[in-house]
Each structure stands twice: as C-alpha cells, then as structure tokens.
Length: 174
Image 1: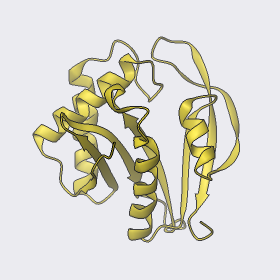
Image 2 (image 1 turned 90 degrees about the vertical axis):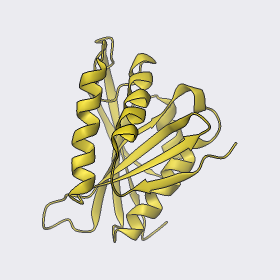
Image 3 (image 1 turned 60 degrees about the vertical axis):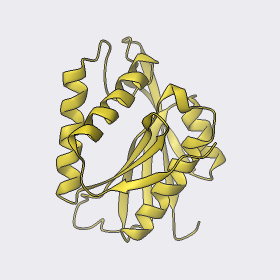
C-alpha cells in the first residue's frame, strides 16, 4: 500500500479538520503526543490552527499522507531555531491514523521529512519518542542515533508516566 505524501504550504480549513481527526484518533489510541484524554475536538482543532499559522509564517514544514478517506498521517519539521542553529530542525508530531498503520507509512513519512529538511537547508534533525514504543523501534531501524532516555518525561493520555528517548539524524552523514 502506498500513500501520497506532500508538503502543505498553506493549510485550509478542511485540512485542519482532517488533521484534527488524525490527532483525535491517535490520542484515543493511547499515543503520548502532548495531549490528554479526553481530548476535545475544539482543543485538537486549536492546535492545528496554531500549526497552520506556523506553516504560513515559515516556522514549520507540514507533511501529510493521504489515503482514499483523506489525510491519514502527518509529520512536522520545526524550522524556527536560534540564530546559532540554522542547520538544525526538530521533527515533531509524527502521527498515523490507526486505519493506516502497519503499511510502512511511518517510515515513508520519516524519509519524506528528511528530504524536506534537506530542501530547507537543514542537516541535523532531533526528535523524541516514548521509550519502548513502535516509533522508537522505527527510528532505530531507519538509522537514527539514540542519544538517551529521560525517565518520567511525559504522561500517556490516561495519566500514567512515560519515559522518552531522544534521537538525532545527521543528514550530512546519511
């Protein structure tokens, strides 16, 4: 199964709604992605509206993957870095709707975000993920370098603590 992936240079209202659906699905499925259960549609929509403003301002690159039902995956590249880090970006909110999981979409999104980073003139990427998660295994498999683990870093949507593992990818060496 293949999913077309593209970068959104502007984010329309219908795309905000589709991204809201993806976020709601991921949180309902237990993903620790900065939000707690119950996550309201309004709160999720407000998040994507802020992301859309960041895209418009050139502070973020937003990639989306689509299937026959619409947007089913997304990942962001945070480009607004301090003056002494113009070569770096953070990868954030790699989300895959449960209907599209186990088909290689996560790996495709990560390859696409690495290419977007190169297109944006970035050579060093950083991300964090829940320790022991499927995402951690994915990043390791894709050749990202593990920096270390921070215990009790965040909460799962149900309120239990989770640790995070920090990774980096040096695109100049990849």
